[in-house]
Length: 318
Image (cartoon, rainbow, N blue to C red; front, side, top):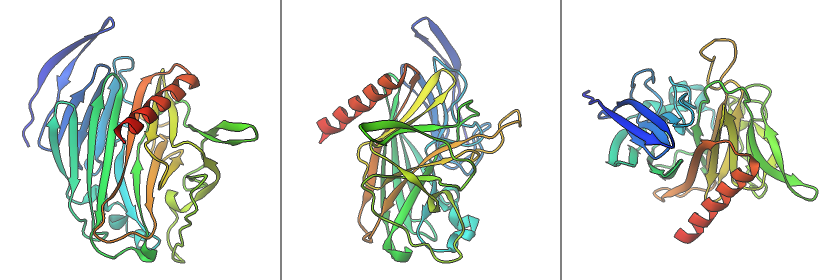
């Protein structure tokens, strides 16, 4: 694999940002006014290990430390699952991370990952990332199930983001309160315990085969969310994940999904989400859109402003 390097100097609000740009057949670097990220398929790149896709690296002019664990990734297509017990086989559980996935640099702001129908779950998918000034990344996911292999006729898609040793491992979202929505702090006690949060109108319940293994997506929290977004804190920054619609979207959390931190004195959490399709039709396209905002922390009112702005963007497109 060949890669090219050159130096790019960015001057922004008094900041001087100088570092090499990376590019190869399986990944490339992308920049907006405030963000630097590397997006790629399941290939290795520097400290990033093979078997993880999506956003290898995400940093800001306001915070040089990467928010995602360098060896892993953010918005990583992790699982395609159903209610069967077949996922005791880790090769099937992590099939999207192991199966062939191609990378395409569409333009200076846009990347596309394509995975042909996978060997076992027979799911084809396309993920498109686009950087939006000054500090956002829009993601569009589309998938097509090619064979009727889903037990119970439903499938789930799981995306994982491994967070790089934040002092606060919690995700925050809005839930129902007595006099309107209130903020919910969500930090599970241990892995695979009350891990998944459903929307208040999400009525679908999985029927898992007896003897099926326990995973984040099999463990449901009693608490529900009301608006399709969550955020988490990293140093002086905030990472906000917002969805165009709550349909099929579930949040998930693990306090240790990202393994031990670099100092080996704590664990890296995972701030994840799922996309659930009950009663799927073979050959039909499914999908969702979301926006990731990574910016300076300016309080919860600012988070709500970002969410309102995204909702207006989605409505204008419709």
